[in-house]
Structure formats: C-alpha cells, structure tokens
Length: 279
DNA sequence: GTGAGGCCTTCAGC
DNA sequence: AGCTGAAGGCCTC
Image 1 (cartoon, rainbow, N blue to C red):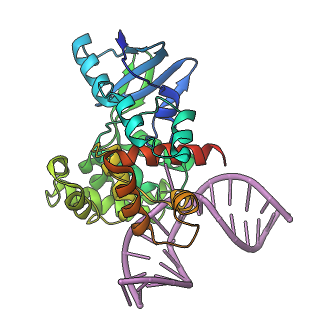
Image 2: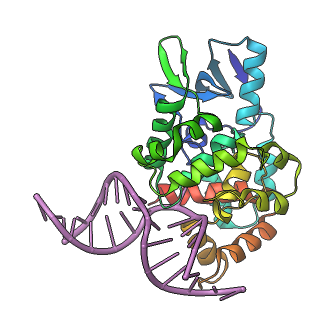
Image 3: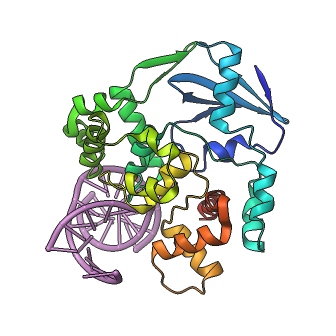
C-alpha cells in the first residue's frame, strides 16, 4: 500500500543513522520488523510504499505512521532549531531524517550494547540475539526473527550472551531483563513521566548511564528534548558552541537542552549523523 | 564531587 | 604475523 507524506521524509538516513539496528536494504526495499511483523518499505516521492503479510491495510497504515512518526510536521521542528549556521547546515544535509518511535524494550537492550562499541558490532549482537532467542517471522519467503522478550533472555542466561560475544554487557542485559520481568521497573510508566524522572528510572538499570538513558528516551519514548552526549557530540558541542574547553557530559547536555529547546534531540541526531558520515 | 582504570571484543594500523 | 590502541559508556574505587 501507498502512504502519502506531507512533509520531508528520508528513509535512508532515518534507518541508517544509528538509532536502530535491524533494518536491511535489498535493492530499493528496506526490510525490517515493526511490532513483531516483517515489513518492507520503499521510498517514493512524497510517499512510501509498504508491504506486510499479516495485517490489513488500516492496521498497517497505523503501524507505519506511528513508527516513522509520519504525522509530525517536521518543518515546525526545523524552524525552531534553525538558531545558527552550524545546526542549519547539519539539518540541510539530511533533511527528512526522522526520529523513530521504537519499542522501548528493544531500544533499551540495543543501547546497553552500544557502550564502547560501534554500529557494525551492535547490529551483529542484536541480530545474533534474535536468531537465537526470537520467533521466526516472515514476509512471503523473506525470513527474520522477532526481538526476544525479557523472559527469553532470562531463560537463556548470561552465559549464552557471553557466547554471543556481548562481553561485559551480558550481565547488564540479563539483570535488566530480570528487573523488567519481575515488575521492579515498569517501562510503560515512562511515557507519562517528565524528563528528569524518566532519566532516574532508566539509569537504575545496570549498564545504563546518562548517555544510554537519553538514547532510550529519544528513540524509544519519543521524548524529543532528550540529548545523549557521547564523545562525538561532546566534541562537536564544545568546539562549535562552548569554546573548545574540556567540559563534563552533563554540563553539555544541560546547556544543549536549554539552547535547542523542546526539540534538542532532533538537533542532537542531525549533528551526530553528520559527524559520523564525515569520519 | 571528580577522576582514573578496567571491562569484552573487534578491527585498523603498524 | 602478532602487537597495540581505540571504539557511540558504565561502574568502582
């Protein structure tokens, strides 16, 4: 089915900018999993074409609209963020790149994996996890696996994660799964909570510090004022805005959230994607 | 309160 | 070929 899009949308940068790790491109089609269903998506002019075996067009349209946040008027965000030449240039190069609304649980595990890692390795880790513990799902003859549930990871145990080369992140993932399965932390509650309280809850998970928590808030909970500060963002913000000195990540985060405002997370991701491509 | 060191694994660079 | 250091942080002392 065809879904029309009113404002800018660029599927390539949206799916391959390091916010999500399971999409694969084959010819003009992007294959991925949304809500445990295999879908394929193709970019058209002012529209996308989407296929999925399992659900009717109304559901597929809802699913896709929500995941890609297609109802969002991204021009409004660009206008609010265009405060200086640096950010304007960052946006210009990848206009249409959108922040997804991913499943928070998958997002949490993905970004626990991201610590001292890189996109290639994160993608392999996550895919191996799904191959071993997920359910088989498919779109005609294209087969993938769903993302495992917390109980699947608990059943497998940290040793399997070590075998799958998650390294020191293995215990973090296992313990986090237990905290969710036991009900000690309810992820869904975070949707309703303000930034500071959300952050406090997420950083209670082992392996989740300020940077990872901000990624989960931004990419999983669509809290668009979240601002993850990794080494690259740290360098970019200090050099371009704060005189190039050595500053703590928290200070940079707080400064950027004030400066960029409600859509600081969008600014963050455009800046990050630009740095990554230029290195 | 702030800072260094260690942690799994991979991969590029010598 | 085999070594060394760095890679989207976090935790501990």
